[in-house]
Length: 141
Image (cartoon, rainbow, N blue to C red; front, side, top):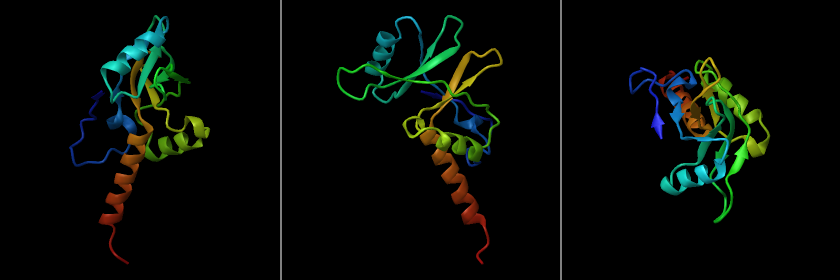
């Protein structure tokens, strides 16, 4: 996966999700099962691929099969803006039904075309890191 950078210094914690964007493969809606399985076979670390229409607009996310020989699981599309704060994004993720909380958010361009994902576990880790930095910097009472 390709991680996008936000132009911040390495030591700076992003205040928004822009620095958490990751590019995962996109597969065509027609024949998505075989295409997704091919990507999962090639990259054992890959958990999700975007399923896109002929105009590269996401129609679903396909997750790695849970068992051997299984089909990828489908999840709906939940878009996210790059300037959304870490806190707001985490709250949005946790407000989803429990079966969908770990499904990545999708970032699309102004025409609705797939750009990248923000994985929930990366979002929560960034939020925890930001909290830890604030806690460490705060003067002792």
